[in-house]
Length: 300
Image 1: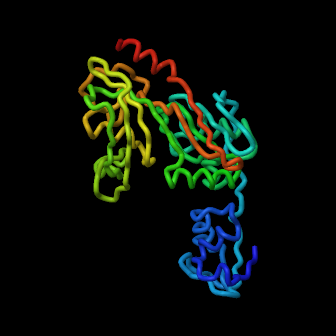
Image 2 (image 1 turned 90 degrees about the vertical axis):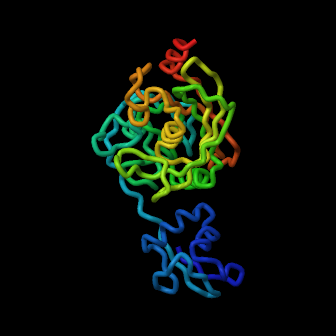
Image 3 (image 1 turned 135 degrees about the horizontal axis):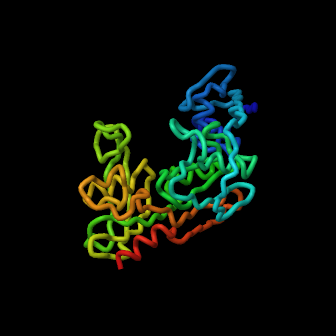
């Protein structure tokens, strides 16, 4: 695309300019276009921070869409909602979201590739359509983007925390407070690279709000609201404050009797977002899965 800078838009940063002349382009995507060397000012490359001047000639290309090469697998999906832009799925526990080392098939991506042909390409061939992830042994709602425009719009909601994600977790120990906020930075564990940890070194802000829903003799059922979305955030936060999630094989500790051996009792029960096209707020909700209910019933 070619554009000659007018007096009205002169003085804007280059990345900002791209979002103004193409409204469907987010600031994040504009930065990617510039960083990938696909944007030129007066025939040469320029930095995102460059402030454009009157009559500057700006040209740019959108990244080429890669042909998806993931094997399609006819795996049943619990589809909560679907239209031309988004696909909301209630993921089962034990399913990996996308292919990775050691998990090249039977993933959610393999399943959605068989379900629909059109998926966003923003995250490449390994994670087509994947806007956000949930862990293998965490069940519940996940949003899939069916085109790049929808993906970029949804990603911005994750970035500015307007996409609301609610989880239910059964933790070990009795929490006395009725509600609270865990505001502790999370980064990679220095001793075990497969784990995350509360740390000040090379970490990012992580905030989890929670409300106690029910107390048992040795457990607490909590509703968790993610403000940020760090890897393993809820699991790391509750383990750090002394209330690890029941059944968590990575952060639950070793010296206790496991009530449930299928993985952490953590499930995404609600997802609220603004629709990419209609711009209307949408709320999706699911019940606790049967395996989760079974454990709770044994505690009554």
